[in-house]
Image 1 (cartoon, rainbow, N blue to C red):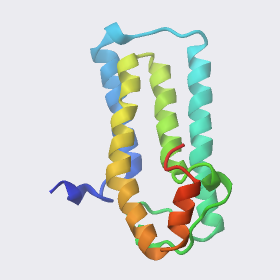
Image 2 (image 1 turned 90 degrees about the vertical axis):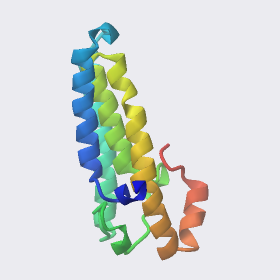
Image 3 (image 1 turned 135 degrees about the horizontal axis):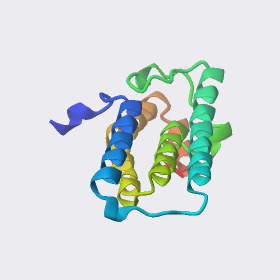
Amino acid sequence: MVDRLQLKVPPALVGALIAFLQVGISRWVPALHVDIKSQSSLALFIAAVGLGIAIAGVVAFRKRSTTVNPHSPGKTSALVTSGIYGLTRNPMYLGMMIVLVGWSIHLGNVGATLTVVPFVAYITRFQIKPEEAILLHLFPHAFPDYCLRVRRWL
């Protein structure tokens, strides 16, 4: 039953739902509000870093003419291991996570920041692990070697 969620919900939608949850938490639980010096600037910087990482992942896929569609990893035509993919196996998801951290800093709520944990857990379980199984099938020698060299998130 739970496996039906694998590769079904677009990761961007998961990120948007978490962002809305963060807004709700910041409104419903104001006791967890914190003020940080230069909060808006820090939030913008962190979100920009996350966006840059995610875009670098997309650009690397486009350069190798392989799919960026998270619902069809079976259409992958190349295993991308250089550039940003030499630092993380999932820069698009890592970038989304960092944007969510930036957004939670903007909201200034500790509870909102904690929602990043279920985002990572969901994306790992229902998106990354199924993608990895497909990549292992498509690239049975290169993918395990790549996994030994580069971490899933960071």
